[in-house]
Length: 269
Image (cartoon, rainbow, N blue to C red; front, side):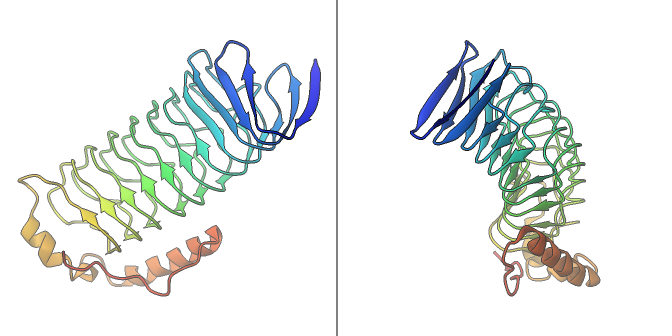
């Protein structure tokens, strides 16, 4: 059975007994043994433990795509055309294989069962958040992020896979990190690496523009940390400074984000 109709007033569509809702302002629905194939609004599906995959779901969503608090374990059938944010929080997703190559806004995949970011989109124009999962590294994650990169409350032992430049906050607190190897070397806002086992400044970012949250434990060398705040250029070879500026410019151009005229060095706090 195929149905096609247009609704011009705000609607809530209830689908069978799966506790699945689609919240839309204006949309065209075409059903064919499944959900609408094209939605000119927001797709929202929540509180459905019976839902295990996205088969039969929409293939094109004009605004936000939201699968929240369901039993979904894989997203291989996720829409390949999404106009805004993707929210996959509080599910049972084990893999991000299936995501579109480029996401135009933010991606939230917090509180799932992710053990790897392999199969992930390479470019995210705004925030990427993968906190509260089972990740041990960031391998396979996005290479370009237009805003915040949030990976707290995982099981990270290394930051391998993190981008070299983060254009917002970088938060990796409450993991199992012993050092900051592979950490981004240019962070345009705040840097939070609290609640780890880090006790030295080796591999510390060359630039952090805003607040730095350091581990509050007896092993962290606060004296050397404070002494180093005005001399970050000594932490890495000087040629990396120009390399990072060049890479940041390329990322800004690819994300269509205006680049600031200069990046302030971290000051002593």
